[in-house]
Length: 292
Picture: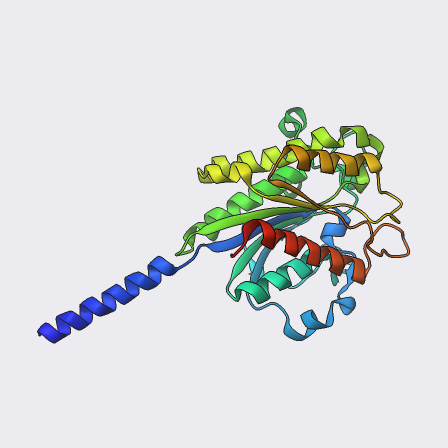
């Protein structure tokens, strides 16, 4: 009897130790316009991704009126374009490298739509905008609920993912970073980009603090890429705004990609350009957050 009690106690200790060692699942949130959404054919995915795929990445994807619905599915790059869904962007490389590095499940919440601006004075696809203006947000609903706010669609899906899945993880969850590539559509109002993007980042961080009660998210790392020097919609004012924000905010990080190659449209990264940005974003991510 005594031996059984000792064995039971040892088993209990082992189980408790396993629970104690269980890490929170990592979460990445990603948003932006077409170079985030992805404009490279899946036929041009790097060979290593085609061969190994994604074993641990789960995502919830929203775009335009398409909602992530607070649900996750196993990741494979695609875009919400009925005529050509099989496309990828730089983030596909980021997720692959994370997948290979941590070798355990992690989650991505992504909202992206090509041709979209922050500033409501700029032309934007389906008249949907990323604006964090209180007046704009008060005037419309989330894009996936019949409104024009991409920011609401993004944050509301993050909240739904937390409620439906992430909060039920036995080891908890931790949002590691906010990835972003956007700005080409704000070229017309480039002088306002500093204020506009600063407000977007603040809105997302504030939302996360209020949703989770975790004050750490007030300093959630934000990582964004610049643009190829060959891009027809690159704005020096927008790039300057990114670097100014990085100088002022230690949790705001800019990844330069001026040397990236682009497609014939002189706007979208080609396979090599998207892969290069993905690798650079991953390297910066690992410098910032270290071990997952």
